[in-house]
Length: 150
Image (cartoon, rainbow, N blue to C red; front, top):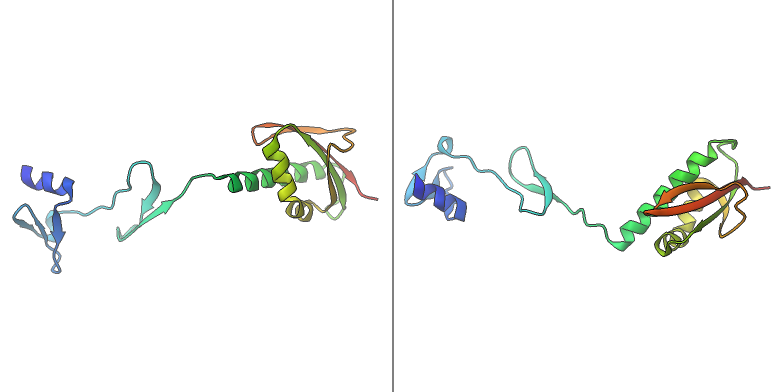
């Protein structure tokens, strides 16, 4: 048994066409062993229920994904602010200020998406913030204001 365990951990075995397993000079029948797919350390994923494959999820956040996430969070913040005093179809003008370069870049790159989602006619950086909302975006403070477009 000790030899079989050592060979199984090192991957020195083969599965035969008849469902038996050849390992350490022994043949094991299907009911004597269990094959399980195991995800490598540092990876995120899950084996399929029938144990025929593993689905790996890449959880790496690159710069582009970070900016997209910031833009989507910004849309969420604006939508929450729109609920107070605006009709669902009202067009708006949006002004914001942030000291974070990544936030500014994300809003600039995703400006068309943001405008479409929140019905904004314009987005102005460092615009008129008469009654700004303050929130956290991308790990930094952002101030923004929404006014109904004329």
